[in-house]
Length: 563
Image (cartoon, rainbow, N blue to C red; front, side, top):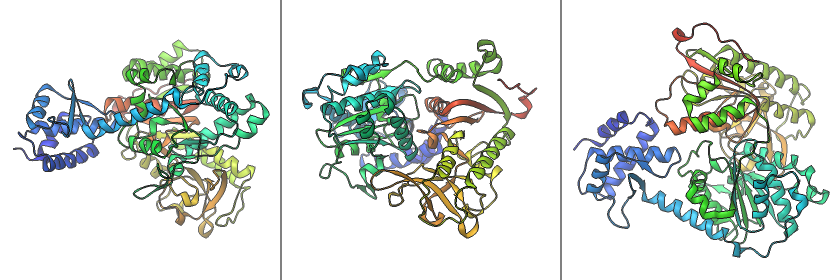
């Protein structure tokens, strides 16, 4: 028999979408399977099967499609035999039984919660709350009075958050003393959710504005009181909530989603919001993608509402996003070409440039340096000798952190010529945080509840030398955001954030987005590549610059910038 590592490497070469991480994980999984469930007949095809399934899980799918000879090898191995077999088959698709059962169980629990008979008789929908809403949004408001669980899906600009505002107002009309919470997978996404909710309150009567303006908002980790080995909130110590809104469900994996259901009181309502076209979670099990499959949506009936009409006009951005999702990558790049855009549209907010893949394009460096200048100028009015723990709930300090959302530079990868690390090397001096200039964006890369910080929160460097501090928007024990300074040593994991990976940027937005897109990504599955690009371009609120890496010999004459 071929050695497992050798066979797995061969399988990897036959599968160009397999990543090094997938290969390493697949090797471990295969070794465990062969030890615990020795195959009746072993084969190198089993290596390829396991690699396919691991890659499928990494891209958010629970099943993987394998070739006929691989199916035959799995059948001969005995890994499909009996109720405890490690693999299950659906036609030409295979799945790890553990994950298939886990996903199926999650959906069943969600459906049980969704049953209408779990709700007390609902109050009639207040027609004043429906003013300005389209039919799909009205259905969502009605659903909150019928179901314990509502699935609200839609792309950027379709009015998901404004719909949630009306849903919450309707729920409060049914029960004025509801304990309501807001949640998202990352700190940035949670802050954006809270801001969006508050921006929609002027549409409501004053009493409801006051009540909903104080709703606590935090990351899922914070709500569940994540700790090593588990969570502080669970079925025996449930969340003190009657209704929970969770945004950006596409980022939530199966383990987190299961823990959330276990921690939610039996009679509590749940509003799940997301966009299935965005990146799957880093962890295993793309819950939202699974729930948005037509067969699953049908099971939820009127509790599953999808918004289609785009209200937030993003011009060419919206057009190109639709092309990418409906026609694929090749059609997208063709539609994004300057000559195509200028011929189709008199004015565009998208620009495509090709650049030498060996260096970071000058337009990126210039844009980041300009942002740094603005941040440093805004920081001049912040205390020059900051002290640990100081609060800076001032307009000036708030302006600084808001300035982070003026520009985002996004890369699909961390390493490589056009990776996040390369951007930082081009801008920052060698050394650590103490050596960086004032105003450099920084990223908290690990949840730290004791500081009120979550993985993905961004701040800026303040002060020099011994006065070096980090300005962040933290969340206190009551769920209220406040501006605070921290000594760098207090953060367990800290990274520069002049550029972000697309994964890290998920859940955030910026006025202007620059995307550094490599010429090839052979180790990334096609579906994941599409989701990466879609997620990257939809971070832009106003303008998008797409930089596509190219061999310098193929550059030719420079591409004229579009207006």
